[in-house]
Amino acid sequence: MTPVSKELIARALAAQSKAYAPYSKFNVGAAIQMSGQVFEGANVENASYPLAVCAERTAISAAVIAGARELEAVAVSTNSSPPSSPCGACRQVLLEFSSDPTKVTVTAVNPAGEHRSWTLAELIPDGFNGKELPAK
Ligand code: THU
Image 1 (cartoon, helix red, strand yellow):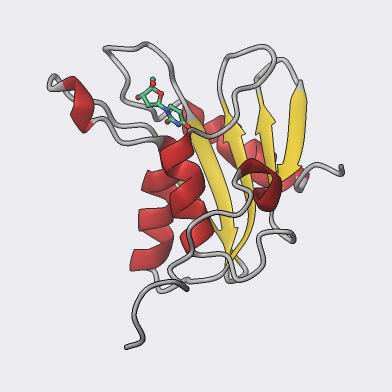
Image 2 (cartoon, rainbow, N blue to C red):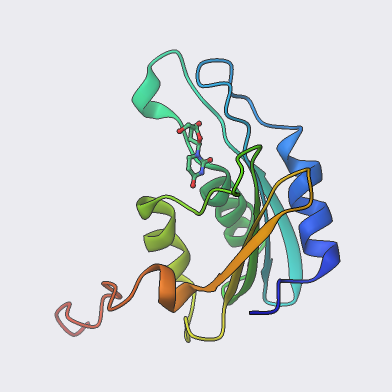
């Protein structure tokens, strides 16, 4: 699969340096394209370990606050080899903002230049999207 744009990958790599991860020492950067705009995120940890927030979800928060709603592409940067894919919780949160997860490319990269790509539908097949909830 074709990776996401070079710009999105560069923005994820740059965002990785902003991570606050003194406990895990696992710095993660994310860049997402939503409604035509790019938003960055990085993981933010806490001395109370379960309160850590992943890079993908801080990026989604920035996008939502800016008014963007439609997820188009995702890049995630870690120092892992091979590059790490998004955790299950982040896959679910990304799905919330995707009207067609077969059209959203997710690319995991590392500073060494390795990359792996999937569609969001591949990462969270048959995911819960709220359609089963009672009608409003
Ligand atoms: N982390 C992310 O930022 N994104 C993921 O998809 C996986 C995990 C962060 C959370 C925590 O700060 C650190 O990586 C170790 O789990």
